[in-house]
Image (cartoon, rainbow, N blue to C red; front, side, top):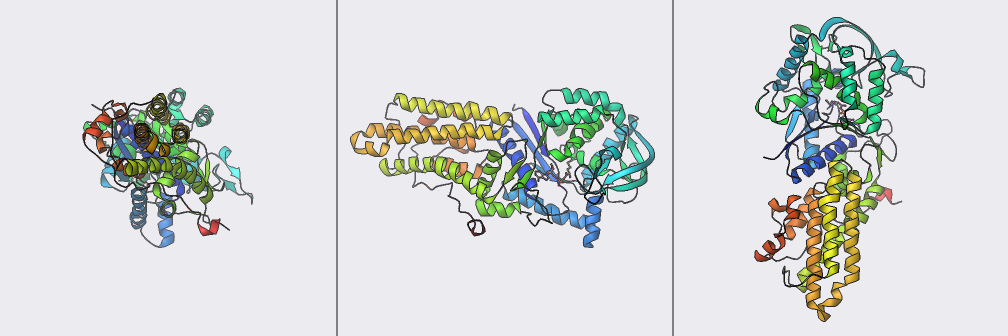
Length: 520
Ligand code: ME8
């Protein structure tokens, strides 16, 4: 039985359309999900939208519509983005679904039964934009002397009757958890979170009475739950909670919550404490990725540099965008994108290096061998050495880096293997062998075919549609496109025996052009 792997993204606020940061997170999670499937794991991949809370209620009021209508309309853009970017989620969860209400209320009852919830009065600072409470000591001063949250968002003084969660009781358990190797990555964020806990945790306000767009507190109907209690519980709802058998038992605890750095505190302090209180296991790993900037700047409406990720994918191609994001940005750190950087990176590595290699190899087989796949040759030392280099990159080096979420390094190993192939083509010059030594030409072309197949399988989690189009052209069955297939010693003989012949090859990585506004 394949080992389960449950991965989630943060669920986005559908108070506007998705931006490039949302696309980045969805794509990274998808690459992990596809990689794990190709490694033979039984994967469950969940994403969704976070539809309650003051931020949503205020935005709806501003637009003169009901929050439920705003949530439905905007949520559909997030679903559309995932579909257009080839994000292979299994569950898209919306927190307004009735099953989610039942799940959150059950979590609440368990925390209450454990003695961790009490009624009191909240007085303090709240940022609607972050949906977060802040201590006075955490605030920073804005340009006009106004108080801002550490994220630079406005805060308002809030006084309300509120339910509190006894977060202070979990200090030691949280410190122990943060010390567990691999629980929170990257390391820098772990130090930041441990320092926050060590400074002393105050109990957390977990309900509001001043608005009603949320999930009602059981037995306290004038309270709605703090939106983060509601949102975090999505990870349980999607796998069947409160039913703890079947799916839940199979998938929980999650293997990986993938989130952005700004919401690390919610995922590595509040969330584990809620789970501990409810007697549930904590997730195995939280990875908080960096922010994606537009030429080094945050995208914002006031700067007028907000990009629609779907348009970007339409302009450059879905796979080019996916490759660029995973290759260009060191995972965990902030990264920057620009049209020039996408074009430069994808032309150099996908079009000119790998695309050209595949196209040259397949074209020569089509023209010189009538597309026939042949086993009638004996490989030279150079042929064997090249194939070993390529297989090592595709079966060992790239998977090792991808398993550790080091995507750029993994793709770098892959590129080195592509370079080795291109160097081999130049050295072997198969086009000159046609008349002088046809058997040698066959050996070179078949070696290249074997290498292209391995390279396509290895890069498939990142550029799934292009890799599949290439693998279709060389007759590799759908079921033989995973990492285990790269270890099958008989695949080539099987392909030969099937009598498969190559048709006229079609390039799968087009050269990109800079859009006109960038060429001036
Ligand atoms: O935080 N670059 O929703 P959200 C990279 N609803 N990632 C970015 C980014 C950027 N420029 N901007 C945002 C929320 N993100 C909550 C989550 S989970 C139980 C609730 C990331 O729509 C951000 O860090 O503001 C988060 O992981 C995700 O996008 C959704 O952000």
